[in-house]
Image (spheres, rainbow, N blue to C red):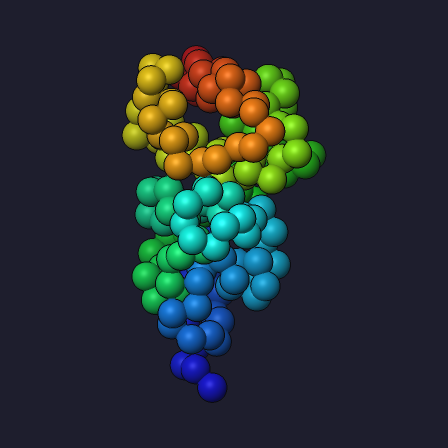
Length: 156
């Protein structure tokens, strides 16, 4: 059996037993029951599994568990709840930026990383940040508007 590894997820310490090369996404979804990050492509190409590690957006499907040990992991569950959605979540709801919603948590997490480093992004900044997040439903324009709305609210 593998040695226990401790992860800091959403501000709480969690000890898991898994092989160090296990994808972080599997631990988040299967062991910690955090279902916000989705399994999309499994190749780090679609963004559905995006989380923050030390404030940087990373694709958790191709991030090995060992790379997250000792770092701060943030999932969409830390940004708000159904009863009290966070600023980004409210903006995405207001702008109706979701259709199927499968890619949405990844886009929100990417936007969170962007707004943390750039509180007043241009439309080009937003598009560049979201370039790794694929949305097959075609709500790209609404996603951009949602990020702009959240940025404005956070600056107010």
